[in-house]
Length: 147
Image (cartoon, rainbow, N blue to C red; front, side, top):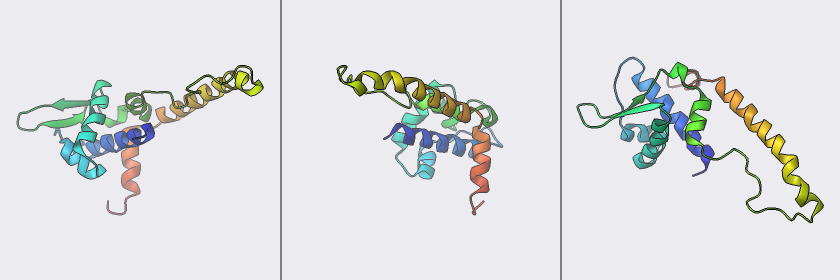
């Protein structure tokens, strides 16, 4: 699955957990999350593992209420936090193999593109930093005619 899709699924997961556990201290199972995302619980657990490694969710094994919960309030988790948790590569990558250095374009394209792509990714991250999971949840519920 594309990195961007993993990111969107991660946002879905965190919004769903925030909505389900907002007023209590319950844990939710990956099976229940998978129903909302309409995908496999195994795939959900893979993304949850990345979110757990970034300290965005906590897991409880066994006991009376196994499952997942946000590690901190949804107001303090930015979309950039989530992006950095699940996206392992830069947004833009240069050629996988070096272009021809004898070519006028091949020799100069990477040095020309690098600052543009770096600035673009930083701008995107700055925008993601301005939005929290809580505000995404609020906007999601506001746009849903069922709520």
